[in-house]
Image 1 (cartoon, helix red, strand yellow):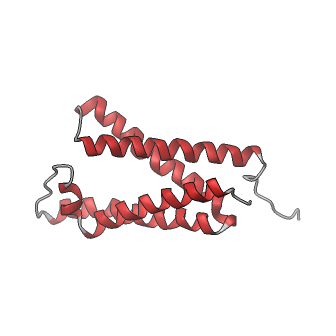
Image 2: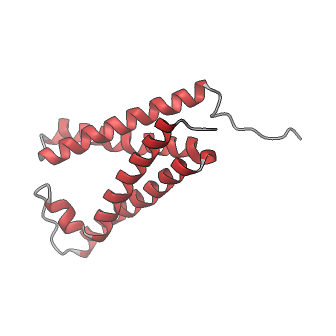
Length: 140
C-alpha cells in the first residue's frame, strides 16, 4: 500500500496524540489528571491501574506512528487508530449517559477521539476500496 499524504498525516497526528497522552499518563499521572480536576492520591494500586493504560496508549501511539513512515504498516496502523480512538470516544459517550457531564477538557478529548476514530475508519475504508487491505500470499 502507498498511503496518501493525508493518510500519512492522519497516522502521524493520531500516533502523536496517543503517544503524548500515554507518556504523560505513564510518567506524570497526577499532573495529567489534575488538568481535569481529578486528584489521584498515593494509593499504589490506583496508580498502577492509571499508569497501565498510559503504557498501552504509548505503545499503540508508537505503532500508529510506524504506519506513518512505513507504507507496509499503514493499514494495520490505521485499523489500530480507528479501534483505539473510537473505543475511547464511545466509552466516554457511555459515561456521559450513565454518569453525567465531566470536565470540559474531557468533553474536548471525547470530540477529538471520535474525530480521529471516524477519520481513521474512513481512511481504512478508502484503502479497502482501492484494494489495499487484501493480504497477498503465494499459493502453495
